[in-house]
Length: 272
Image 1 (cartoon, helix red, strand yellow):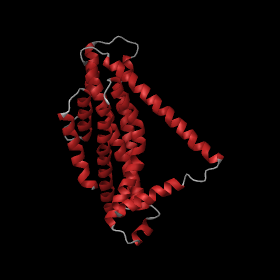
Image 2 (cartoon, helix red, strand yellow; image 1 turned 60 degrees about the vertical axis):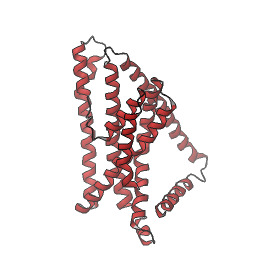
Image 3 (cartoon, helix red, strand yellow; image 1 turned 90 degrees about the vertical axis):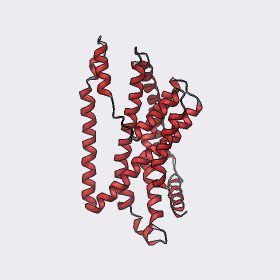
Image 4 (cartoon, helix red, strand yellow; image 1 turned 180 degrees about the vertical axis):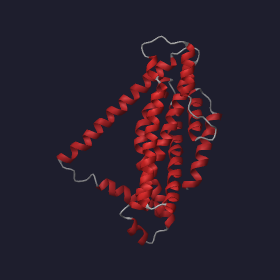
């Protein structure tokens, strides 16, 4: 109850920030909104073309590549939310200017931690959702999925982004027990740079440019597919949601629902 009131006041503060906008102050939000809309449209169009191209490959190669692409995207999103949540958690739990006031109020520590968790979740995941939803929408649109697919997608994205945020909050609390604030910030900066360099090196070593404008053999294509294979261990949340979405597209129901239970089973006990 107390955590709900804290979230309500935080939301009201955000809404009040948009009041009293003059003509000059409206220009920037409209510009950002226009760029965001163009990005969403371009994101949808790009992934729709990629999926259509992959689906046209022979010998069921395209179906395997599409599933691997979805799995790779989910792993990337998981890592993005995890790193983003680490930075946001450090700010909202330990560096926020209103912490002293909150701890002086007759509010339980659990309510503060819960409210800050949902604030961290919203701040760290909105950009990820903006990037990913057009892609998964194009995935369902290309295969002419029913409306239940989009409900399944939204229902399972919620615990999927909640899990890395939970891990990040726990991780930042452990780091703050060992290191001071400025050291923790340096560690997170190093990890972020390491992650970005790793992604660039990985994409460069794929050497995907050799397939453009050239005739390649089936053996080369299969070798490239094998190099793209992302981790699909059964304990990874990215594997659960990938199997669920691909199974729902194929018309299955029992297996996708099991993946839903796995996702919510991991996320719900920790945020209740």
